[in-house]
Length: 171
Ligand SMILES: CC(C)(COP(=O)(O)OP(=O)(O)OC[C@H]1O[C@@H](n2cnc3c(N)ncnc32)[C@H](O)[C@@H]1OP(=O)(O)O)[C@@H](O)C(=O)NCCC(=O)NCCS
Image (cartoon, rainbow, N blue to C red):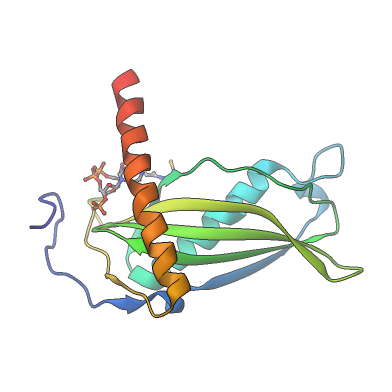
């Protein structure tokens, strides 16, 4: 019934999706920007990875590693002196893997205006001290929004794993 590679087949206690929620706020400093005064995409990815890892750990309490980050797009430029708000939460849990959704917002400090700058979906895998996958706590959804996110994430998982197999075939 369980993935044979899991070192401990005991299913941890399920946890509520909302308890995984993370909000992280960053001020865009000179070292975060390029010669045009806009933020490096890699810096945004770093913050996304950190916000996602905190949400994954908050849900699972296990060590986690990033297994994949889905294709993502930067929708608006973010400039020096602006604020970046990242909101992350667990959308879906399979066995050892969890999909975390991260919404990135650009905030303009002089007006308080906020707009969506990016959305990212990351898969984190719970691991033990030997780096082997272990079962994550199942996710308990409470709202229609959380249930819709769970369903959408389940479909993305199937596409993601098919893509991974295709990449492996090319290696
Ligand atoms: C992620 C990792 C632990 C998976 O280990 P593995 O031995 O390949 O494990 P499996 O193939 O049994 O997969 C374990 C789970 O990860 C999921 N998974 C593995 N690779 C994945 C990928 N690329 N995208 C999404 N999910 C993935 C599997 O679907 C499975 O999920 P489930 O237990 O919920 O069904 C391993 O590939 C690893 O350590 N990768 C490096 C991670 C890392 O260092 N990240 C930092 C950036 S380099």
